[in-house]
Image (cartoon, rainbow over all chains, first blue to last red; front, side):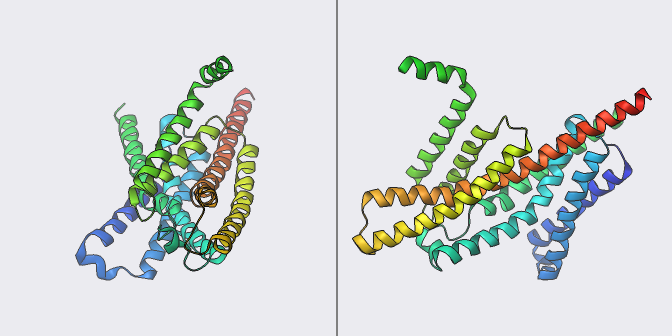
Length: 142
Length: 151
């Protein structure tokens, strides 16, 4: 992995992801979950993702490592974007089609950005960090 | 006519395969049922992803993704309007509880377009624009470094 800054941003992303998972999964830490904590962690996750994309492009990282780093950055930035768009689209449908639209259609909630933010982005993030870490490890040993 | 169709399928095997995947997922979603059913919703989402991917898989230019984004926003607003009109007309003509099959079919199509297809097009449009800029930036930087090496 080229550049110490990319490595720092990458591991900072992993750290933030682990903190978020621990906060939600471990019952002991659930009392710390509040709007400010989630907003700060979400903002940090987004900014670190954008920083990783920009630095990967600027540092001229090549090959599969570039793809994995871009995947990591895009998926981490995509979580906050999906959350915001999910709420905006949900509200837009209520504005245009009435209060009962989501209940009437039987969906209950806006599906596309919900699936992207909650399923696709975390899986893509895990694939990205595992791929980047494996390729980085191979580079070191080679 | 069938020979021409077969020739077209042969020429565009990959695109045809993705359309088949789209249709299979859509039919599966319709069989399972979308209303209040998470597997049906996920299948509908995946079918819309397959359809958009079938169209955009070889695109590299930002202009095309920009067009896709713009078109999907316009289509979203137009089809929301049409969906509303159809719902209103259906309620007026057939009553709130009674619905005819034709407006019901159209409503399902409009619903699929505005709820599943358009948001996927927005995401693919924005991601495609960013990716094409990233690729362009990468090639520009390579050219600059080659020029510096020559000097």
